[in-house]
Length: 290
Figure 1 (tube, helix red, strand yellow):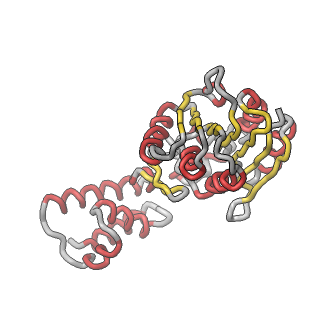
Figure 2: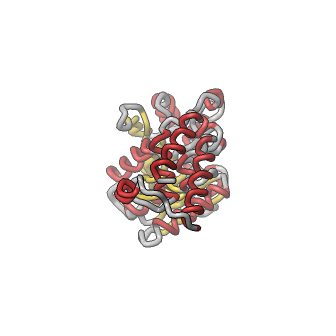
Figure 3: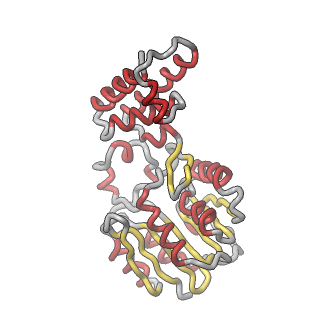
């Protein structure tokens, strides 16, 4: 058996399962299973693999991963990581997989919030990719990560330890439902960021199996119209924000005007909608007047 033959077998299995990028997925899983880089794969792909314990273990791991991917388990959950803002975040089935769309929010905050002596609240933190990226790249004084899922917060804590240990930012995690997670008497925040659940319930059934069947439903379902969490954030944010604080919310591509209206109704000023690299509405930001 050669690496090329293993790759061919894996690719065919994933193609039969309807995996949208079978060849690339099989290659990435093979390289990871055998701890190879692309150069060594290309040099050795046609050579017969030695019959030893390591080959057996690596082959078994690869075949197990191919079987999981054939069931449409996301590649990132199999490998346990996803790149975001130049960092490798640990992910599992308890958190949303960080996506490039969300980098639009982080980049906007980094562009606009130049004073690092600010306190940041990341609601619906999940993997912690937003708050941790702001800590590492923005150097903010303090970041609070809040999530309703204790399992998600375990992932957040692991990513804090892996990625933000030397950031100089104090980061704390809080378990609870939106603002109720923040203890009474906490000093007000200067920046609120969030990627809340925003997919309308009826839309979820039509999503790709990787998302619908393997990412956490509580992080996807925005209820009937997808706007429940934006209503709550707009209404309740004043409990924890300092006057003049900035709010940055990720949204679905068709939710810009609705979320802008919700913030304006609650007295937020300078409310704007920003687009992602694909030209879709992606972030609504505003300022809490207080």
